Picture (cartoon, helix red, strand yellow):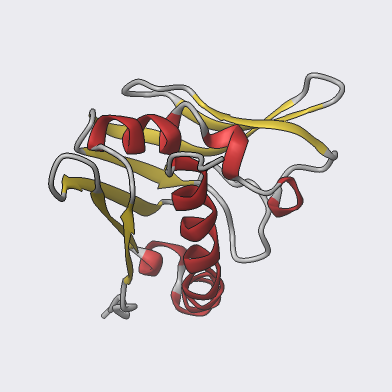
Length: 159
């Protein structure tokens, strides 16, 4: 019998001081403004990180030489409320199209000027027990700081 071990999902929630449309836009088309370039999975230094904002679009790292590394592929696109991506990164933080954990990001308006963003990274068991548990541990520690960076970028600037 081939049993698959369930690995607990990672769920993180943050309140963003921005309307839902703006929060969704900063998370997706504004990715290059908040994602740290030293968090790359490609072989070369990152010049920019971007998301192709559409169903089937990719989360890409672009190197100075123009080479692209796919990090994720968008499998559900419902602006400004939700996007789901296949996270195509292995437990060693290398790009791997065979990896299929999922990142499900939901945006819910919290009044007119704020948004609750819930990120669920799950399906780690698709990677195998050991690799899935390793990636889960890493993203559980990584997503909170990344979401803080996103929330800070999305918030209005005070001068």
